[in-house]
Each structure stands twice: as C-alpha cells, then as structure tokens.
Image (cartoon, rainbow, N blue to C red; front, top):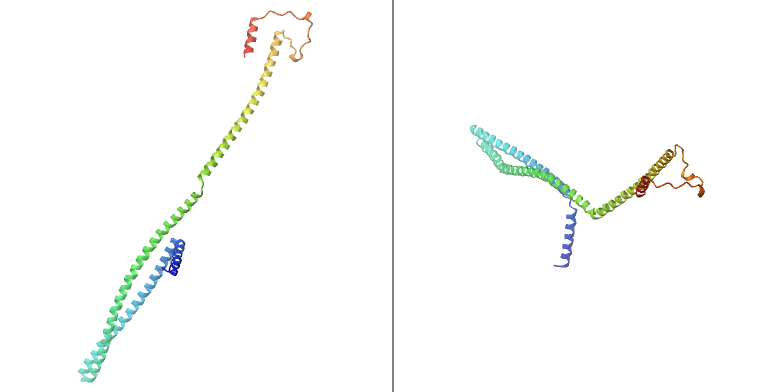
Length: 257
C-alpha cells in the first residue's frame, strides 16, 4: 500500500469516526422519515403523470379507432354510389387511422403496465413509510431512555460514596460530642441545684435544732452558736453530768451516718 493510499485510509477512518460520534439517532431517524416522505411525494407525482399520459393515449386510441370505423362506413357508402376511387381513398384514410390506433394501443398497453407498477411501488412505499414512522417513534423512545439512563449513571459515578460515608461518620461523632457536652452541662446544673436545695434544707435543720433547744431549756430561746456566752471561770463551770446511754447511742449513730 502506497503512502497516499495509507493517508487516504487514515483520513476516511477519522471522518467515519467523527461522523459516527456526531450521529444522533433521533435526528437521523427523523431525517430518514422526511426523505422517505419526499420520495413518496415524487413517486405520487410520477404516478399522476403516468396516469395522465395513459389517459391521453387512451383518448387518442379511441379517436383513431372511431376515425377508422367512420372512414370504412364512408368507403361502403362510396361503393354503393358507384364511386370506386372515392371508396379507395376512404379505405386509405381508414388504414392510416387503424395503423395509428394499433401503434397507440401498444403504447397504451405499455403505459397501463407502467401505471400499475408505479401504483404498486407507491403502495409499498406508503406501507414502508408507515412502518418507518412507527419504528422511528419506538427507537426514539429507546434512545431517549438510553440517554436518561446514561446521564443518571454519569451522575451516580461522580458521587464519591466513600467520602460521603466518611463525612457522615465525622458528623455523627460531632453530634455525639455535642450530646455528651450538653448532658455534662445539664448534670453540672443539676448538681448546683441539688447543692442549693441542700443548703436550704440544712437551714431548716438548724432552725429545727434551735427549736428543740428552746423546748429543752424550758421555753427559753438559746442564743445562736456563733454568739455563744462568755467563758465561765473554772470555779463556776457546771459539774459534768453523767453520760446518758441513750444520748451516747444517738451520737454514735449520727457520727456513723
């Protein structure tokens, strides 16, 4: 293979590849149907012209047939009147029209066959066109579905599922941290409230203790512990009371608690 043949082959292959990649099935099918419709229009025009030609031939044939019959009648009339020369001339005219009629008859038969053939072709093309339209609609629908599927697959291919999964895991950990921090703050606030209520409850105990002391002192109110009385001299200190077992047991339970 020569250099120019190889270059020509490369150019043709590249052109074919470019054309194949540029072909849109929907547009190609639509253009094919349009071309078939144009061909059908041309074929119908040809059939119409052939039928018109057939009609003209048929009229000419009938006219020459009628003329041949008329000149034969005139030839008979001339012979009846004894005009042999005139009868001979009438027969010559009859022969001319009869020959023309025979020639027209051959053309008419040929034209009739041509019209019949064109009509069959037109009917076949009409059927092919109807079939092509149906097939075009079907293939167009399939092509559109294929394009939609391809676009969906391309979109799905662009989605990085691994990175998306990692992002969800990170966000889940962050939400867990936020929940833990919120729970811890809630527990701290709860402990503070518990301490405040404990202080309030402690104050009630102190009040209750003062009340009991007052009752034990015979109704007199004892001074608060922070304001205690002045220390007495050793000679004036009250004598130590004997240990009360019940009181000692209560003190031990409180200390153990």
